[in-house]
Image (cartoon, rainbow, N blue to C red; front, side, top):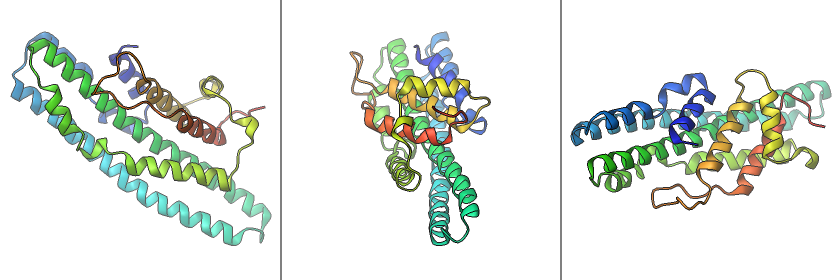
Length: 245
């Protein structure tokens, strides 16, 4: 799949309030195709995009840290109260489980946001260098590697922590943990633009973009660990709107 189509689909599959935060890939591509832009102007446009990525990413990351602490507190309170009122406990467990899965899904979406915007920058710079016969991509990407939006270590750690929490507090039956095709089928049958559908779409895109291939280069993201992908999909079954036999 061509990257222009991929990023368009990802924008459509993302949360509505995120859609204007992605790389303006089509506009930049059209600019390169129509004429050879002045490098200083082109770099200025890219820097404006990076500023947009950073502001959005940092805001989301800060919100995630706050939400992380709030959910930890709610789980602790639930554990303390467990057994005093079984009916209330079941309702609270269901509510917290839903909140955790949604939170987990939003963090996966943010990692994907970082991945796809980085990849878009690398590809648009490659097109620019080809058009101008220049060498802008390598030094510019070196700068990108130090930007806040590219540094997903904290969010990725929180994703893993909540996967562990879901496994420990809300265990999933082994029979419910199946492969990508089954999960995608459940997702496509689900109505609306829920976090379940958005997260699975993001995960599958990350796996596709980060797989090892003959086109892998120094500017490519490392392959996504398949076991990590399986953990995410297995956890997402918790929020499936369709019963899994």
